[in-house]
Image 1 (cartoon, helix red, strand yellow):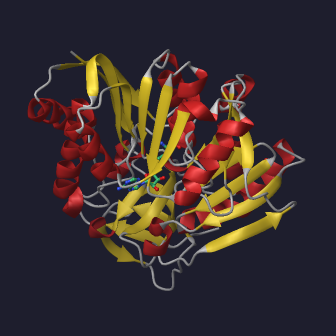
Image 2: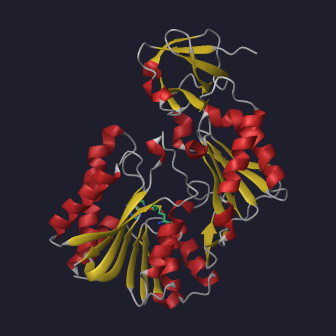
Image 3: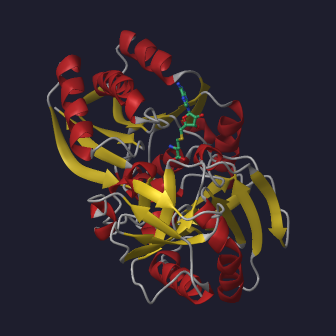
Length: 397
Ligand code: SAH
């Protein structure tokens, strides 16, 4: 079988040779006539020789997402099934450690660009953000149903990146049962995290912070904890479990805080040690700083401030402000756990922002450990953009 070709401009093959899975439109010299979005294409250098196999997306800045770099390995059901099986096998040890919520397929990280698959108990949720994900979706579902025969499948394909690709949103049951409004999912064998598959953020919750929530638990013995951008209270639940004296959860979303409150009861944790504060984090931090309040542990897990290169500078100011305020509220000897989930924010830049924030706050601070998305959110070495969530554990002294 022959496939349509995309030929690159002279000298524009470097990123493909480095196996980066995104082929940007600027590199493209010509595209065979009649190719439609979602079709398989062969990527070629200017002289016509083979470079990679990809899936075409006409309206996207990423003209093709590349899945194979071997000429004798075009994209077919066998290749996709093998990748899905390998991705699930990789999560085996994490599941065996008492995790019933795991990311089974982490898009580029598992060589399936744009395809995210999360499993919450017996519900498997797919989020397709590219034509490439659409092209492999049915085979992925078939393979996943063989591995998890009792699972129900649900789709949450409603991300902004999907719309940029020219696809419309699609959400709903694919097969099996309808997810309940709230599902409790075991995390590291100790905490049950509230997940809202139908209406929650992402596919229902933030599995990427699993390792850092565990760390927060370890730092919380007898601590006064401030959990900013708490969502459904994951960090707060771990802090209580770890023996926190008091936990303040702050978020603008009333429904997320309601789930956090219910999550506290579900985990048999003392709601008397916990507060749920519906407020803008910036305003709350300023108010607490004015009152000279002090905490043993402050957590800052904001939403993505930088959506594009154009907004990165403004985002940096936002991160600096929030970290200055957060650092001011940590008592000497206490800790700050601070994060950025912007893929555009390099770890070194984030560390510099925190250094500036410490100067502004008038405190000296040390980095105790670097934090990152948990292991099931696999990072692709050729695609540094897949390392999106980074954080620092900072000691204030
Ligand atoms: N830490 C959470 C995930 C946080 S997601 C976890 O481990 O599950 C980011 C949260 O920030 C969302 O719940 C959103 O409602 C909240 N948010 C966004 N902007 C905010 C603001 N200015 N003030 C307070 N909360 C905000």
